[in-house]
Length: 112
Image 1 (cartoon, rainbow, N blue to C red):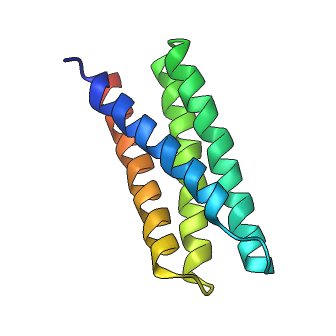
Image 2 (image 1 turned 120 degrees about the vertical axis):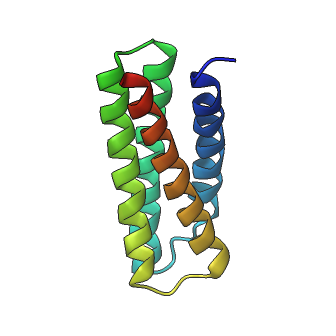
């Protein structure tokens, strides 16, 4: 088992969670549309991370893309703290943010 195996699992888990969140968030109110846009940006960034891993990008490139992914999810989490949201969506976004932070930390630790 290599050091990237848990990272790869976390990436797959986050990818699945983001896809479900993007499908599940309604867009009927302005704050829901804003949340959906933030989650869509994070989903696009997730694609960049996955492509970087599959193309064996440099560790610096992977860390940079993982950092942008984490910042996108941190913005989504902050957005939720200012608006009305059901607890399951709030928990899912917090979980996604935590997974992104875990991925970033793992990638940073493999660089050292």
